[in-house]
Length: 152
Image (tube, rainbow, N blue to C red; front, side, top):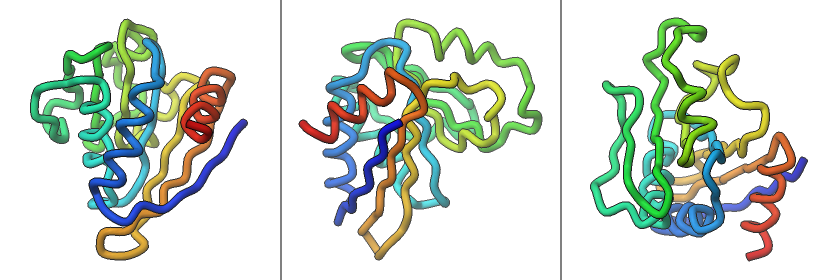
């Protein structure tokens, strides 16, 4: 398991970090984003999408649960905050083990359905625009991904 923590001073800096991560991902990678409302999860995802070459506007899929975007590889952006039943069958494994990369906001709502190997990213307010970003891996692939990002 690999861990890394850093601070960003603006949404743009957070997006730049996410864009760099997007340049390293492969199909089947799963990234979870944790943090309070307004912590920067959607800004992170916007930067990530830019790094994948997504041309569409990216916003939170609050009412649709999953939005798909075309980029270098498909991006599956999930916001599962409004899930009422953690075990509700949504076919998420088709996304997690599919042809794209999954970014999941509020992952605790579907903890039992998440793949074991994933990159966990937590965002914390440390000022009006400053964020502390903590990342840790949970398996071999996510460890490799985090090491690549950290030493890039």
